[in-house]
Structures are given as C-alpha cells and as structure tokens.
Length: 179
Image (cartoon, rainbow, N blue to C red; front, side, top):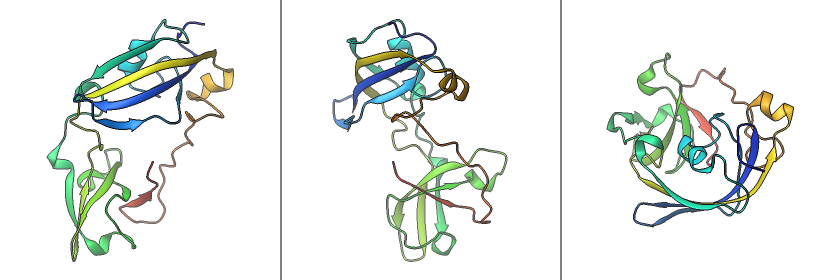
C-alpha cells in the first residue's frame, strides 16, 4: 500500500544533527496519520508521500521547517517562589510568553536554578538546529474512520491525549511531563 492521505505509517527513525551527532535513536517507531494532520513534520510527510513499506531515505530539515530558529526573547528569568517545588534543571512547565494570554501557552524548560531565580527557556530543545532524519518505512495501513475523525492514530505510540487547555489552579506555570 502506498503512503497517501489517511494512511497510518510506521517509521523506524534515527534523528541526528547536520554533523551526524545522534540526537535520538528511535527505539520505538514513530506511528502517525499521514495527510497534513500535523502529527509529524511536513518535510517528513513530503519525503514519504507515495512510498511503500521498505522505503528508506535520509532527509535534512532546516530549522525553519522543523522547530524554528532559536529566539532569545523566549528565555525568561523568574523569581524562584513563582514555581513549584521541588525544582530541578530539565523540568518543564507550561506558561504564557510574557504573560500575554492571547498567545498559546509555551512549554518552558528549566535551564538554570540559582538561589532565588530560575531561568526558563521557551524555545523547543531542537530550535535552531538542522536535523537529519534517517527513515525506514516498516508498515502502511488504511486509517480507521475514528482515526481520521480524530486526526491521530489510536492504540499506538502516535496517540496523544487531548490537551486540556483549562488551568483552574490560577498558577501561571503548570508542570508538564518530560517526554
């Protein structure tokens, strides 16, 4: 079966930077619903469109087509007491950029903790990096009606719970599990 809109694609992948430094060795395959549902990068969909199981390729994706350029304005220093405890480098929190409620919340990563200050970085960890994906298509199947209606794969690693945009706690930052 060819990879076309509304097919579920299983891809073994390896992610490196442009200098071939390994970033992620996809031990679990990526399983996604193909066809513009934003379940993977558009450049990956473009590379796999019309291909079949057994197809292998390596593509390079520039920051503009991946996770964007690094934006220094997304780095914030916050008072330590505005964030929950315990707190350590690498933890992630959802928060609003510059407290502006009109934007979507960003995921901020704690990059430094000092005595009474915390450095939060709202950039994606891979922002500003050219990415090299080695892709190996291992399976292609037709999506179910339910998967097409929901816009994502069910019962596989490609599934994401519906994001809960409501935060009743009143906190500006919400703890977020690290993936």
